[in-house]
Image (cartoon, rainbow, N blue to C red):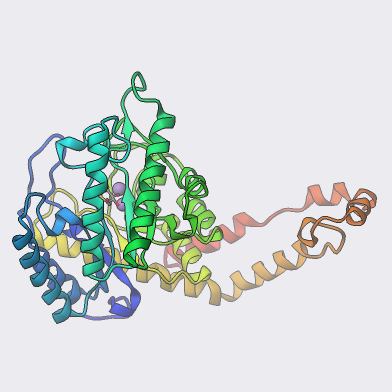
Length: 391
Ligand code: GLT
Ligand code: MN
Ligand code: MN
């Protein structure tokens, strides 16, 4: 069956190999699904209408593979990409699974571990470039602590910076022409992670040697875990020109990292997110970093993947209808007209001492300003009725 919500390559949907390949292990239970061969995932995702896949080095090439094994695996994988037309816009390093990273990778207190993490990442960047990536993600899953009794957290930030600076130079030295995207998360698997939110990451980027090469990869679940509004985080990243990539999924606040199917928990938030992305002209990958429920077999995995993409397209259509809805557009126009009626001195004109003097002299009708209703109840209800299918 195909309808207007059937995804196609031009929709730019991508999935991590680790998402559809998630075997449903959790801290309390063993895997419930068999591992899926990346080559098979590539074919299945292409069939479902995805545009690309992303990967950790270890998703494709096992940690202990020999160079010959590695080359064979990469050859087969590239063959699958050629056959299907799927692309790999993003890759990343697994710096969290192996026991050596138990106290961090770039921020490990152990200097030798920090050096190994750097070398592993260089090799993973080489692999990413070999499969055609343009963005390289850094998620510091183990970059954090349960206790601050030993490591000074400021040293951790410094080591993190040194690693990103080093790897930026590596990329420049190799002439790779790729960009980095930092992915914040407040906690899990560590008690607390460094660079916990998009805001922290944005400031950190401004302290780097090559800030232009580095942006963010915000994840809906992660900001939501921190109790924050993901749409606002993405807006700030966009406004700073730093939205290099995005991880779409869903999440209830105050829970473990649920990584639910996109829009399955809070479709209204997802609607405002899509509205922001589409209205801003974001043209990067729409990357799903979510997991099928642990209850699912393989069929459920593909239903999950299809569901992520369909929900995006359904809500994108709602965004189109929002902009075309006569009642909504009339209300917006009315509000805007009144909001912009003021013609006196203001911040957008920039500061001049004459302007500031004029502002001091400006007469404001405080009573009238205080009385103005915002009509957001009306507007939000129109949005709700649109989402609920009543208009
Ligand atoms: C891991 C994490 C994700 C990150 C991935 C990239 S791995 O699944 O939960 O949020 O994006 O390292
Ligand atoms: Mn993620
Ligand atoms: Mn997550």
